[in-house]
Length: 220
Figure 1 (cartoon, rainbow, N blue to C red):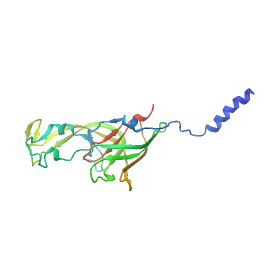
Figure 2 (cartoon, rainbow, N blue to C red; figure 1 turned 90 degrees about the vertical axis):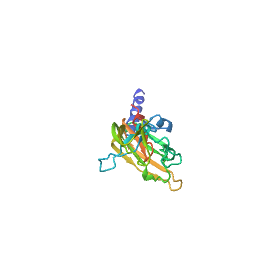
Figure 3 (spheres, one colour; figure 1 turned 180 degrees about the vertical axis):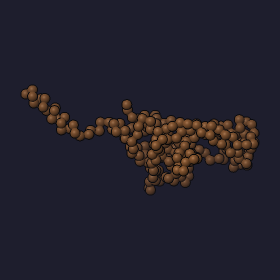
Figure 4 (cartoon, helix red, strand yellow; figure 1 turned 90 degrees about the horizontal axis):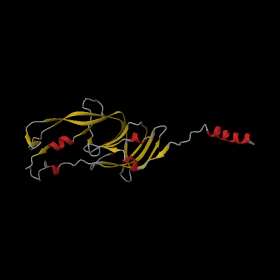
């Protein structure tokens, strides 16, 4: 009798031991993803100037944007008045589902990207996953010939160079955005391997990028 009690668990283990049971797959809610969102309304999409291919480089223009101002006496009706300039917009990722295989380090994301400008096409969105590398880059503020420009309250008569924070991605993967023919929503589907340093970046010209440290979703 004692022998049969021992054999039963052994038979159970030998039968199921060869099967892969997905104990490490879990669903992730939108709120948990948002906990790993960083640098909101800070970086903008750009490109490495020396690269033959489109290699993204995300820059923070907040310093020149704050320190360079137009003529304070400019007429509000002028097209060069700040109130009449295109506004930078943010993007929003609304997820329908996120699943993560913690053991295989594979993530699957389905959802839609909201925001953008009038006339924005799905191909205009740039979606990447890669490892973030922080750096600084030089940017030049080109004076407008149509209005007077001021730097820290002083009128300037030449271009000004700035060193600004930036980051790029190593080994970036790019993912397409498609448009739903019925709803015109911009749909995103991602299935890929990640690691603890992976970040998800959503970008669009003249918009702030969305940055999610999705590698932190992995449970040690």
